[in-house]
Image 1 (cartoon, rainbow, N blue to C red):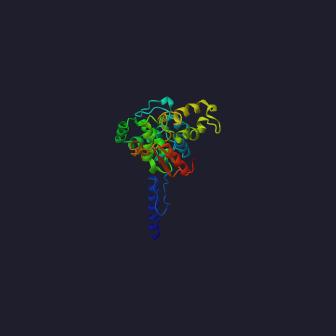
Image 2 (image 1 turned 135 degrees about the horizontal axis):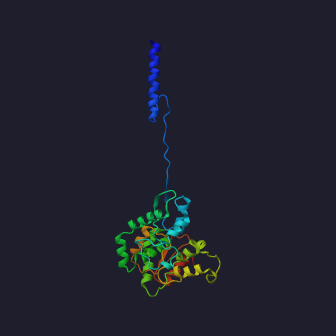
Image 3 (image 1 turned 90 degrees about the vertical axis):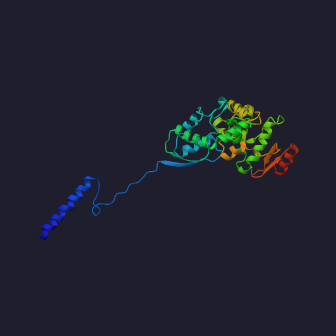
Length: 283
């Protein structure tokens, strides 16, 4: 009798086991519990305020988001909703519009999808109020973004100075006595930030540089071009953009920083500016 009961129990266990196998399951005390591993297919990437398109493209490629070359190519194509009147004068058409922030991307993304994410964020951050202020000041949003990019690079070491630096540029732009903004960072954009890309030769005079360098220096360096650069020199953050449309109320026409870039000195006259330079250890 005991043998018969044992046989019946064994049969039941075998039947349960076979049934569970058919369903892709296992009998808990007969099989090892399986586990599922989820493979992460996205990456989080941060782009600081003031990065150029070249620096952004490099970081995208380093993180396997998309091709550097393909991203640079698409940044030189028109984008719906963005008005740029002097496209033929730009190094990169969409420089300034690749909004700096932290993003999550899929690996091996389509460069257009990546660009869309940047531009969507730009459109959210640059509100109708900001656009209206730019227009009230007499500038297009593209021109104001150019000014914001210059402010961004001038204030990289101390972004709290944005509004006062903005006032200096606005005062110069309004005054016929100051046709040139004379901002060093606009020259550095061509010689340093885009130097390798454009073939800039260090320690070679401008007259002996290649045609791209000479052309873009004339268009971007505010020691050569009157008023604003032909386009943004980086991708500014929202503080610099706000400062561009909300300058402080000052009578300053000059500013400089000490060698660390942290201490700012402002002046209304050239003589005071020169005195500031001596105090800062520059002259």
